Length: 196
Image (cartoon, rainbow, N blue to C red; front, side, top):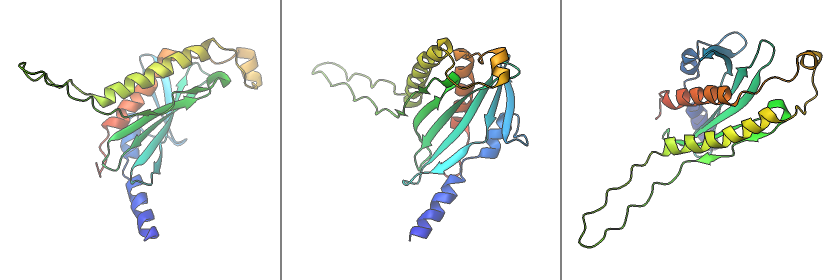
């Protein structure tokens, strides 16, 4: 029974279309990354790592690197957890630009708001629109924005190689980081998954 469950989890993990994701980013190169530009900024995204969860869902993790100049890249990891039916359940972004910890924490899918209570003698109030993905993205990028802004201003705490000592720490551009991460998140959420 356990081996059957394991095989089902492996089959589910293969459901994310890694090839299609890479194609939407200009295709995977030999080094296992995709190179592309957005609004004049250069990026690299590493091949996703897909991990099955015990409930039959999966987590897709990708590292997005903003190429801040010709010799420096700023990496952050984006994680999207899906339920067994393919619904996005949580997002997270983390990394250490310039040695500064950036972690949005787990942004989970919110519950729909409860319907307004009817008032006697008045028409039934409309149910407010509920867009859980939009709310999750808002919370995710609000948290990211404040943390990357702090990292951009902070001193580099890493041991640096000779090149980094000559040229200084890589520039951290919060807006460019957000643009690349948001682009990758939107692509992951739009990709069709066979079991969804």
